[in-house]
Image (cartoon, rainbow, N blue to C red; front, side, top):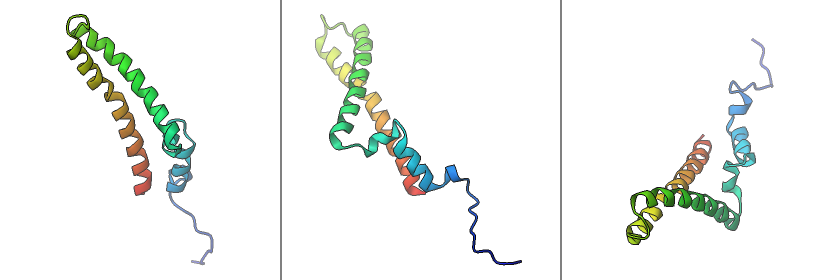
Length: 101
């Protein structure tokens, strides 16, 4: 069998770590991790505000703000952290997966 100087990688090009890394950098959502600190916090803040709006409507059905403001605010605050935490976990897991490879 003759030796060849050309190395053929058995992994498809779109699944190679270097190309997956580039795809993460270029994607709309996963590219957030490559932004500057200010813009990253701004985007995450928008996710938090959207989550807070949704959480406030759910909390208002359980604790009417006119009668139970403390519980309403507490449940809104707790509910509004759910979507940003899930967003951060998804960003972290995608970058960790590519970095681990």
